[in-house]
Length: 90
Image (cartoon, rainbow, N blue to C red; front, side, top):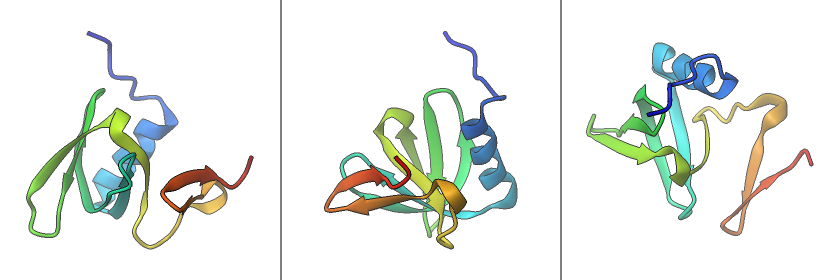
């Protein structure tokens, strides 16, 4: 089993969402949009609590992006256009 790399920026950002109980939007590769609060993460999955506090376990490889519900994202924002995720800074 691979070790969970807590020093990676993406892992630290998710930990920040957990610590602050930030409401996030999670877009899946199937184009489904989930909204909730991240409860925990490991090297394979992220657990999202929906608006009724039901846990949803999502495999990391199924996620297109995660962003704060407030629409933040700063200089690294992504846009979803017609069910495709496009990096607007390429």
